[in-house]
Image: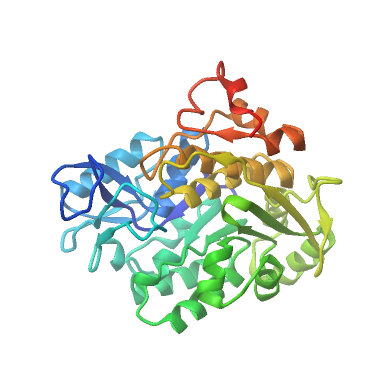
Length: 386
């Protein structure tokens, strides 16, 4: 299958408003406008790093919709598949400047009935959505409406024309679900239908009651690649061994395009690039790799998960070994963690590759603060002993 894009990301993007000065939303009188949306964040980050990306979504026929399309397009993302809805508004949200996990953090969403919530198999060209080497989706879209949920089930189903890799970030947002049991069932089904899955250890416990990477892998055995994000501790990668991946591909051959697609899966899953001593053989034909996260002086955590996914996908597209894929994800997340907005420019490829290639001792002393991505000249200052 010939594709024009490295990654196609489908989902809702919104206009964001962040206080110009610290304070409660009730007290702040001035806000800075930005953009936010898990899937478009991933597309923007990848485009900024030189990958060919497309965002598929719906926005209102309003000024905020104009701003979103222009701002996402300014990153180099193809926005020709974004549709305008004359009857529904573009979603917006307001948040305080801090980390969403703190008690003082506030976020107010105005997305009910948004243009994006009307996405469905009737309003989205699924052939366009499938037109990349990787299709990236998140659980946020599944929570927006029944139509959105059905669309994601269709895109993750093993049908002819399915992209070589379907990437799914669980992104559980409790406030978007009216029934926790439904959220658990829907998100688990979508994760098990994907090829590459990102999930936070904390959200897996919250939505599925699972504790620890091994328990998560046991509950989600189907994806060839599973990344369990463990916050400031690090991340664990479960990756199907080549023999198991070939067996899985053979089972799916009748429902997928022939040899070209299967070869694409093998290449994107990095089966020939598994690291040597850096990984351990796990259960269920997995190779398991853990990489600790570097120390980061956090400015705001919003968007860090999206940046991690984008960095990991970038390294996957480049065929990097497992440990380097995880380190690249950590570095891209660190770029967002040390910036105030939902989106931050990732480190240059050369900069990230240099840091990702550090020996284990140097990686463990890596300490990143605001502005660390700015210049190569100051790179020596990033590595310092605690």
